[in-house]
Amino acid sequence: MILQTFYLVLVCFLHSINCHDFKGFDDTIQFKINWPGKLDNINPDNEVLDLMTAHHEKYQCYIPLLSAKNSEESDQYEGFSPLQLLSPLFYPQLCSYRVESYWTYEVCHGQYVRQYHEEREGKKAKLQEYFLGRWDAAKQKKLEEEMVNALVNDDKLKFKKIEGLNLPYVEFEMDDGTLCDLNNKPRMTKVQYVCFSHRKHEIYTFKETSTCEYEVTILSPLLCSHPLYKPKDSEENLINCLPVDNAPKKPRSVLAMEAESLKFNKKIQDGEARVKMELHPIDYDSPEKDVKPIRKLDLPPNELVRAFLEGENCLEGGGTGWWKYDFCYGKYVKQVHIDEKAGFQTTVLLGEFFEDDHLEWIAQNPQKRPKPKGPQRTQISHFYSRGNECSQTRKPRQTEVKLKCLENASSPSQVSLYLLEPKICQYILGIESPLICEILDMADDNGIISWPNSMKRITDRMYAEKSKESSPSTEATPKKDEETASRDKEYKNNEL
Image (tube, rainbow, N blue to C red; front, side, top):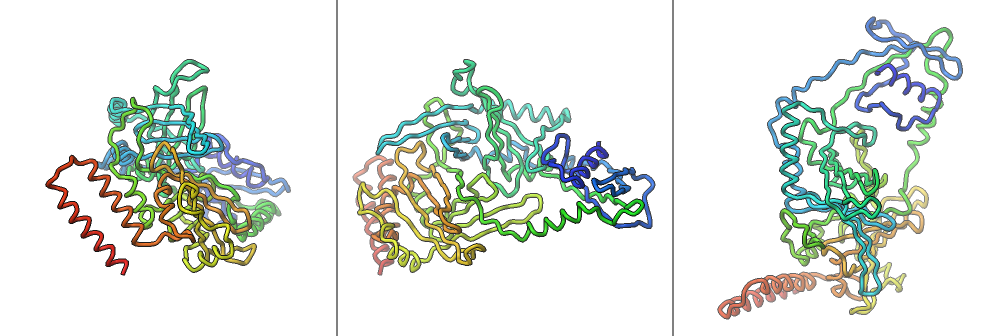
């Protein structure tokens, strides 16, 4: 098998054949082809393969023998089980989203998978939704027992290929979804969790494998501490290819390929023109009464607003393509690519927030000013400037961040993002969320949200909500007034 695999790789290498994802190839076994010209010592146990290139250049390649790796690390492991490692996704409940042209796909971990589309006409919203599968405590217990038995019986793990690597996964089979019109059966989804250290529980793939049956792959760092699920460290196996007769030290096609690779590496990629983003809200009220979460996150919407405005809750890892996007309110917009196999990260700064730059931009673009406070104000725009220099324009990158109120959303913490590049290295980042509705009237005529007045309004609203939840008491009223007066005095001092 190793000999056949190497032969196929070398044929693709020498003949420039498109061999992007051929079956049976395992990237966890890595080879490095070396062209030394000559060797003083050759291991007699190596396999020998005679090859000829398209230019009739002959070579003898010596393939090393591979020894099976021991499993001492997994045998000595006494830590948490895979399901225990994934439990932070379930307590409190977290959801991951994938936004496509029409449908939005929602995976609420340990709860359900949902597909929905919202249409809005003014303040009215029409929701079209299908539940693609559900999960509950009984199914969780059954899966735990199955995984314990599989470990005792030394059953083989299930693998799937992700970015060239064969990786094991933990699978949740969520059934009992909305009835399918085509086969009159409930919809079902297999949710597969894979270790990926630089991802944050994002949806890697979402596909329909057969009629009303789906498969979702989630990339999460939580499994990476388990030795059976983390990617195996693989060393390169050196293959020496020696010229025969009058063949050059390296084939001509290899030299041409290396020259082309050098040209490619000098190019700077400025990203895609349009990217649809996905984020992971942390607070969600289920739209159906029969869907019962194991545990709900007790975090009021106003606390989410405060954390967002203070930059505590940054939106990281959005997007599904080559580039991911990070946004931190009042701080920066970044474009990020993480190469998992090579172990490095590429970051491009699309802009930082400077109030003076924003005010100058507003003065030059008066149409960007917010509308008067009230129902007519549905969004505000902020200008993020002084990003990394663009190779094409020789100017710093810049981004207009549009914060838009999203009414009648299915979740108070739902966040939808999109990125446009209408001009080279000039971006528009759109952020739509019910959380934005809370801050629109806090902005002045230039779109600036002033402190500490805004925080006082948010905090007062939080106290008011908490007082409504508690039972009324005449004795507690004077104490509440004292607290409010003390807090108002503190804010006035801060303003001074």
